[in-house]
Amino acid sequence: MIRILDPGPQTTVQDLGRVGQLRYGIPPSGPMDVRSFVIANRLVGNADGAAGLEATLIGPRFTVEAACAVAVTGAETPVTINGHDAEPWTTLALSPGDTVRVAAARAGVRVYVAFSGGLDVPPVLGSRATYLRGRLGGLEGRSLKRDDGLPLLPAPIPARRRLAPAELPAFETETEVRVVLGPQADRFTAEGLAAFLDGPYEMLPQSDRMGARLKGPRIAHARGHDIISDGIALGSIQVPGDGQPIVLLVDRQSTGGYTKIATVGSFDIGRLGQVKPGQQVRFRAVDVAEAHRLRRAWETLLAGAAGGPVAAAPAA
Amino acid sequence: MALCVELGDEISAEVNTRVRALEYLIQTKGLPGVVETVPSFRSLLVYYEPSRTAYEALCAGLGELARQATTATLPPARLVELPCCYDPELGLDLVAAAERLGLAVDELVRLHAGAEYLVYFVGFTPGLPYMAGVPERIRLPRLETPRVKVPAGSVGLGGAQYCIYSVESPGGYWLLGRTPVRLYDPEASEPTLLRPGDRVRMRPIDRAEYDAIAARVAARAYTPVIA
Image (tube, rainbow over all chains, first blue to last red):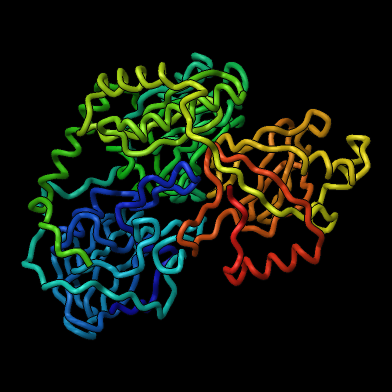
């Protein structure tokens, strides 16, 4: 059992998300930065999809009641165990009563904490991921509160692993993400399209797990900003009448009626999820074949990260 | 990754039925690499796993199934009966809508509850059905100023479209009444009630029955009639 002493502004239980519910209006949820989440699990000897925590800007403070291992990844943040500095991106063995503090992020937004065994909250529709707006999954469908207790599934203490320095993410002040134009790119003027690709766009503080709201050069529509409502993919970029883009993310609405100028590749969603409010984003167009190549490259790198996937523990 | 298959550029039962037929063919025949699908008025969003399919093969497979997707493809639809209380206290726009249409309130209720609605798709918020089948006589443009908060269960009209708000959310439809049935219940084993392709009928109930059903719903002791 782990006990939350201070949850931070928004900390939720996540796994790799629920599949097959978008046709009922329920989004997948799951981590914004899949790579950091998966690496955290590998560092504590878990299968890639074990449930852990995603914190936002400031990490949680918690104690553990039994010996276990934790790993902290994602945004760059100081970590202490009982007040002593500890390393992120590595296996940290804890004794009963140890207190871990994950402080405010110096760079990046989403911090991940994985626990050996994984968090044992009841799966809902096949997943332990929290969908906040739908009050579904995770711990009672909400973000964590002080004094929450989270049980862990039984697991041995894993051997120590660490991420190779070359595999650590780089946090830039301006982040470039690759997009495939469409499906409604033809609904914008040539100037509007050029403005979108020139940028830059500033991440706004009202961004959340549903969508990244951005502010920058106005993207002008050629004829109206409404379409017949249709499905919204991960990374779809809606442009409403004000000409400002919204990138839709893991907790997105399943359908919507605004024109979509482009889609951010799934391989770049994690980097976008680490852009702090006030920092800049630029969009670069690639074609479908290039997007597939980038996806394969991302998968290959992830497959080998932190020593590769851990053999799945017996199902709980 | 995902791609969008567009089967038309209009809101019509025919186009939407083909969308759902394509989804049904994918579900029953299987298409390698497809992870999940999201139907809407005129298109099907297809999520796929690029490591399990080549993009060109997927497009070819979808094209082939789209050609087979006709209105005759689908199995018989479910018919869901939802109790609805048309009371001005719950249907916040009932009186104004009747006035705008030049109808008596009773007549508006009779026309609304007398029709059968088709769920084109479920989306926007969890379990919210987008439906068609609104009788011509009771069609109204959307509210000029959308409400910031529409209570869950509110049944609303906007043009030829009809929806039932599944959670409290903003909304711009005329609210005629409310169903005590939960279209979205995160604690239920099946959190969403309605599915794309369902047929829906409203059964008018009075306030006493509304309260009685609401109490049973809260106690998880109520199941709507589904044929």
